Image (cartoon, rainbow, N blue to C red; front, side, top):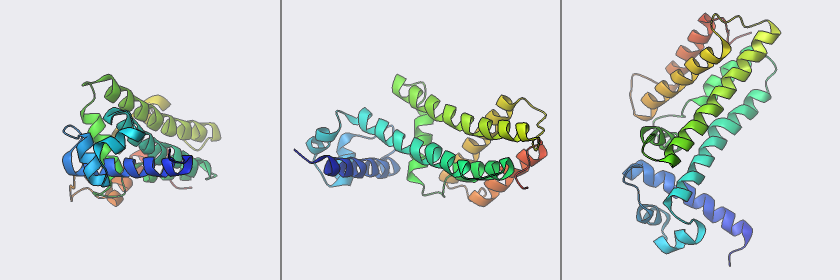
Length: 200
């Protein structure tokens, strides 16, 4: 039996292999055999670590939550002012670029929403985390007297999540007209014009 640390490392490698396989084959047609080929293992070897493909995809989605939610919240928590927190939340929530495999997987989950309970659960979990990040920052800004939004906090947070998702989709789809920098600037402009400045 593999030691715990070795098992943890192998599981992380399989998540990375799954992300690479999704980028190549797409989530809808992904199979354990695709992941096995990407990882240089047999299908049976993957089943030693994960019961099935759905469990492996749940783990890939957990990695997505850590990257785009836990890591972002940690960055935001380390910043003093609500204005700079909001700027960081916007910046950290966008893909790193067209080759962002993890963000591509998360968007593929969105496409499959409504086709299974697993996909519905994962999409909703991600959305609630995004919403909570923006709502928390906006609430702190309102309490500090530096944000005066014309919309209820929940509605403004929903709009920022929608912009984040829309721009992010264009970025990972390779739309050359929407860059990470232009998407960040556009989102900050919306926040600034809705009473939530992103600069002190």
